[in-house]
Length: 345
Image (cartoon, rainbow, N blue to C red; front, top):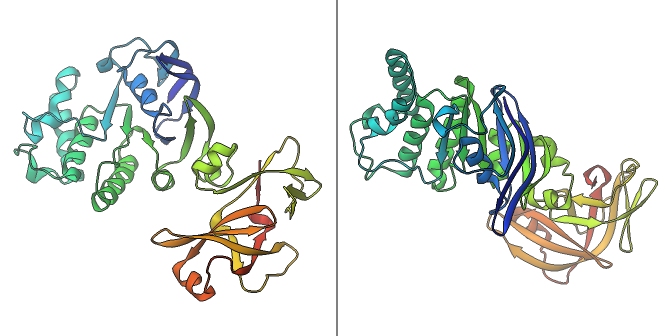
């Protein structure tokens, strides 16, 4: 278990404040947030690489706040691999063992197993020069896991890889997590990675945690406008509520159930908004006449800005649906939203 209590780190122009996290043994936990939010600072504080201003860090019930990095039982993998250019692949993998008191036979068996799992046997005597990004990242993983850490810290390990290598390493991470008795804590800004790998997650915003919870819950039920937008919900509106209705400017939306107290916003995913030539009907459907305000080609899909009254929705349409509808700017359309697709917070 990793416990972070009231962690505070202050640098000129930035502060990481009131960070409280509890991560279970063997969990795959994700830290998400934009660049500069403080994600890497948290894992470097756990690893003992950066000094902390206040707070406590515990691993498996043992306080490690003031211990040296090699005493903490953690391994760390960076996006730029941080391998030693003058050492062979094997010497890079085994480098950390010199700082840990381990049984040589046990360590040798673990290194051999890791190299088998990561497909590194053909590379053991090679220099790391001229290896691919995927091979270097596998070596970095093997080196971090060779010391049998209680915690593996991963700082955006996929971001520097091309798409093919990224998928390979992502699959390896999932497989390794299932097979080793190690807690994984991974930093990323990509919620697709979080959805595939993570069990729970925390979203950071400018040095503070905005939300913690199971990955699917944070994805589908964001607690703040920042989290909603970061999770890809492009339609976030301030709203007032009465019974089962939400009012956004002059537009009234019917909700699936009363929103409860202290709710201020509605959020609707762009893929959950339907554009059609004729309006949809049904008790649970909000349907409005509207107009196409703008069209953006996003490569795999089209993003359409659809306006009704003084509210503009951003809608995701497949290429096939877009061309079937023959959409163009200023064309009249119908906008439909199921009440179940409206998230209130």
